Length: 488
Ligand code: PHE
Image (cartoon, rainbow, N blue to C red; front, side, top):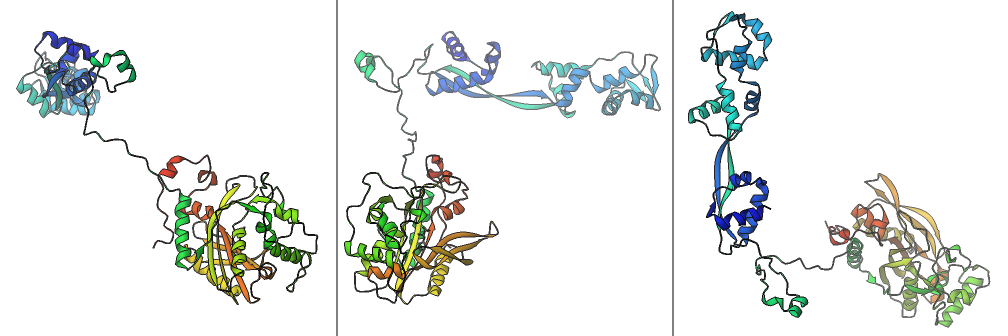
């Protein structure tokens, strides 16, 4: 509407001298007119010059007098027609500020005599102040002297009004032409591209930001942990197999076949391929024997060990399956001490809640050497966890089928002000190591923990579903701070 009005007016007039007046004459909103002027100017339909106008606006006090009359007139009218009144009587009739200002102005105007008695000196007065204020409100211009006196009484203030004067521009037309921003297939087919006017390129416009890859918090924490292990002289184990056989996941770890963890309520078994194709037969034989009847000073579990059970494929429930394969390979070589670690995904058939998913990442470390003791395990754990910023540790005896002794690891959480469980550890049993072929005095100390737990603590996330899985907010992936683990 404003656009038609402006372009239409310029068709028959040289100039719109004042956009403000133009708006009020044509019943348009000031804002609309200004926006249209800016846009038409951008496309050079019009030329626009800034203009400024000084105008006067009533203060709150001025607005009050414009409505109710000036205090001096209010005071004059409060003096009764007989012509006099006691000053304190008069004061009671008026608002305190009206009384105060009224007294001084009416006195100055010589309308009244002020004493104990206030008496009229004239019969009739005119409210010039109110009239002037009303005229300013109506946008009329008034005398310089009157302006000065109203300004001195703080009844009006100056305001600068900004607007435009407008003339035809080089691209003037009485109606804006739609410019095309794209050359489409339809334009080419119809041939109307010949008539189309195209929008000019803006070579200064910034292009959209190119999207790049982003690191998930789990990856950042994982990288820091890797660095810590590497600094401690550990080598990374290859963990690139989520599918594992029950043999490597359980049997080789001296975990009996009737152990509840081997139930399908706890473990995801594969339907296809449901069994492994290949196991090292000699070693399988030794594992079977140690389960059934022991050896190496052990009584074993004394049950009928079944090959079919060991053949079953599953999604590995812990990365200790990988550690087992690595130790088996190591035992085949002439003995050399080793430090191994891994950080990768494991799967458990668990019900999902705030802190559990059916898959998570396990961090695992192990040291293999002659004559290691529980003291070495405690020492390594203290070293490792203090590099993660957890230097107060406590250990609690625990049970794992494949370690003896076993210890749960607790760390004092300064924020929660309590001891929280952070991992599990132990010394691998001789029933596991000796069938592999290690010399008798070789010991393996090992520990494991989840990657999710420290990540949630470091990133202040209290629901695991906000960290991992389909409910994760993508903006968390795009914007998350660096991991400060191991950075001092
Ligand atoms: N595999 C154990 C777990 O699943 C962790 C662990 C690793 C415990 C090594 C002892 C030694 O929790």
